[in-house]
Image (tube, rainbow, N blue to C red; front, side):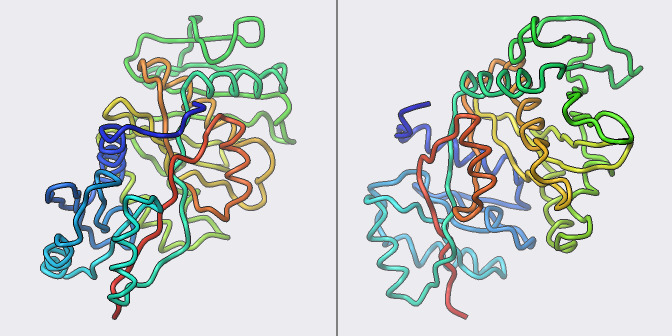
Length: 310
């Protein structure tokens, strides 16, 4: 997706799809603004979001602040670093709001993601995508477009939302092949990655709670011999595939597990007829940025959270 400029209606749909994924406890709207409320300390679930990047008057600021205070929450805004919202940044700065570290909103075409998934599997050569029935665990041959037939053995079952496993011989360890499992519902094997040693367990538990609430979500984890090594979540809503909560255990990083997850998500997007994807990533997360760049993601805009003074 070479042109990262999004039309106003696409900015609107992307922001609404973001809330479809984090599923805050409550939300409301003011003209041009989406206002989610949640007790969990996850920024996207409790910050005011502009639905367009221009023609928004700062006169709405006191009303937004009051709505958050009425919910017992500190007013917080998620403002894109775009010229059309510069007056909002200046006004918040004048009021003593503090700005957090930058986060990139990145977009990609599913076609570019498919090309990257094909390259990933080609590099592994003997990698394959296998679709397995959640009901009986059996697999059957079928078609798939993220991986070509000459590079992969392809399987499918009759279920409406099957499990998917990607196994790569290049990722085999002493205990056997590494596999990616795609699930309809969150489970302990997926959730365990977020609270594993090396991560903030409280933050991980909050993320599991939030990501588990969305009716649009599908969940994936990577395991070797039953030990979960990486996990991620995707949501499909408003004609977007959105990627959330990508996490790999520290000792398993650099082994292509994140790419395996993205390849599985790409196949899911194709199955559902989705042509575009987005994600959000901290601007200083160099390994994640490199991975997403390989899958065709480019930055559409960068934002900061602006938090009210204590």
